[in-house]
Amino acid sequence: MLSAEGIGKNIEQAIENALFELKAPREDVDIKILSEGGLFKKARVLVTISEDEKDKYEKKTVKEQVKEQTAAVSEKKAEVENTKEVKEAQKEEKKQQKTQEKTIKKAEKQEIKQEKKEKEDDKDEDAEEEVYQEKGVDPVEFLEGLFKVAGKDVQIQTSEDEKYVTYSVVGENLGDMIGHRGECYYAINRVLCAVAGKTEKRILLDIGGYKERRNEVLAELAKKTAEKVVKTGRYARLDPMNPSERRIIHATLAEDPRVVTLSRGEEPHRYVMVFLKENEDK
Image (cartoon, helix red, strand yellow):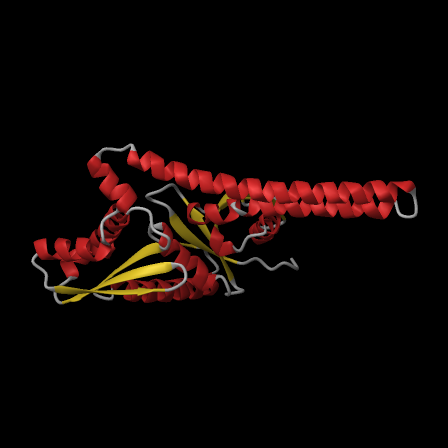
C-alpha cells in the first residue's frame, strides 16, 4: 500500500490515522488535504509515500504477504486443536511454509532477472547512451572537467556512508556555480546523477559548503516559522521548494508538538504549509 486516506475530527488526527494504516513515518510521505473539516464535518487527508521512498515500501510487500499467510495458518491451527483437523492444519502449515519459501525465492529470482534485463536493455542503446546509462561517467572526472571549463580551480573530495556518496567541490569564487537559491547547484546535481548512471548508493553534491549552509538556513527558517504560527495563531506558507528541501522543513518540525506541516501544490511549485496543531481535547 503506497497511499491511504485518513479521516479524523481534525487534520492532525486524520494524518495520524492515515500514517498508522500505511505504517510509515511522516518524513516518508507527502500529505494532501482533502477536507479541513468543520463543526459538523470530519477532516480528510490523502497520505502518499513520496517518490524517493517508494522503492523501500514496494520491497516490503512480499514479506508482508508472507507474514499474513503465516498468521492465517496459525489461526487455523488454533481452531482445530485436539481434532483430526490438527494433522490437516499441520500439513497445511508445512505446505504454506513451502509456498512461502517458494514465493520468497521466486521474488528474489524475479529481482535478479529484472536487474539483468535492465542491464541488457542498456546494452541495446546506442554507444553514447550506453556510456551514460550502463557504464556511467566517473563523477570526479565529470566535475573536474565541468569546473575547469568554467575557469574554476577546484578540488573534489569524496566521502560516503551506508546510503550516500558525497562529492564536495572545494575552491574559491564558487558563488556563480551555486546560483540564486541554488538553481545552478541543483542543475549540476541533476546532471551529475544522470551521467553517473546507475550506482549502488545515491549521489549527493556539495559546492563550497552550500548544502550544509542551506540545510542550516532551512532548519532555522522552519523554527522561526513555527514560532510565528504559535504566536499569531495563523498558518504560514513557505516559498516553493524542491523535495529535498521540503523534507528538511518537515523533519525539523516533526518533533514540535505545537505545529503540523503539510506539502501542497504541484511540482515544481510545491510548497510547505505550517499549521497550529489543534487541541485534541476540544
